[in-house]
Image (cartoon, rainbow, N blue to C red; front, top):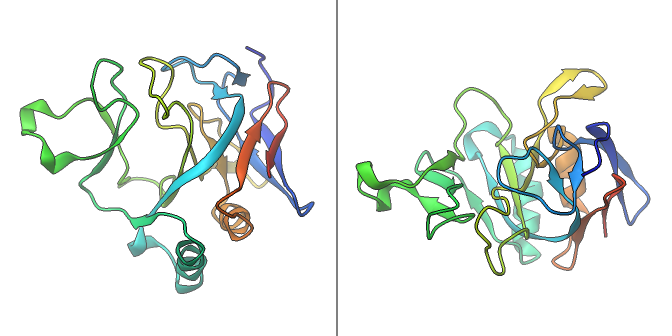
Length: 191
C-alpha cells in the first residue's frame, strides 16, 4: 500500500483532466474490506445509478445519452442498497432491500443518501465482481466528492470521487469500452 495524497487528477484519453478524490489510505494492489484504500487496476464502468429527483434536466440528458450508448442506467429509490458483508452470498452486489425480511437484510450501504449529495450519481466499477471474493472490497464506485474547499475534496473509503459537474463530463466521454485505470503510483485515467 502506498500512502499518497487523496486528491489526484483523472485524465481522459481526450487529454482533459479532472480533479478527483481517492481512499484516505491511498491506492493498494491488494485491497481488503474496510481498509480505506482505492484498488489499483483497470475497471469497467458496469452500471450507473442516479437520484432523478436531485438532477437538472441537462444533467439527466447526459445520463440519457449514456443509456443510448448502451450503458445500464437506473434511477435510485430508497429501496436500493449494496451488500458489504463478506459473509453474505450477496457480498459486493446491488440489492433491493424490500426483497428481504426486515430482520434478515444483510449488512449493506444505502445507495439513497438523505443527508448528502455523494450518491446523486454512482458508477459501479468492475472491481471484485467476476468472481466476487469475500473480504476483497465492495462498493467501489465513482461518485460525487464531498468538497472541503474550492480546490479540495474529502478522501473516500476507497472510491474515486469527482465534483458533480466533472463526473458528468467524465461520463460524457465514456464508452462501453472505457476503463478507469488506477495505478499504485496514483495515476488515474479513463481510457
